[in-house]
Image 1 (tube, helix red, strand yellow):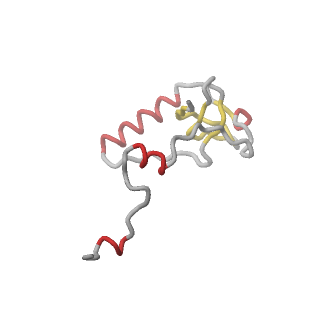
Image 2 (cartoon, helix red, strand yellow):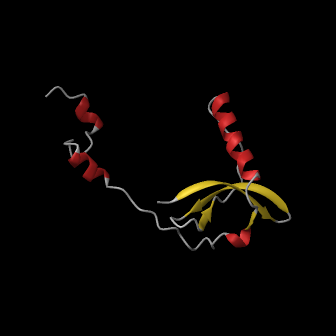
Length: 105
């Protein structure tokens, strides 16, 4: 199963923090295209985000050469299709159309 963390990346003579993705063996397979900006929907969430970013500074700095080319897409294990989940739960196979909700047939 793929996992991720934040890492400091040295590029273009400066440092940024990006989301880095790893395969099951811990090999870097991809990273976010843009550097991160802290964000949270609450002060507590923002503090958690800042803590994760602070942790990235304590890890080994990586460089752009540590990231595989963008043409290499990580293999992601896909889950069940929506139709399969709906069937497993015994739900209707299709979504009810908006017009049929208001009909009085």
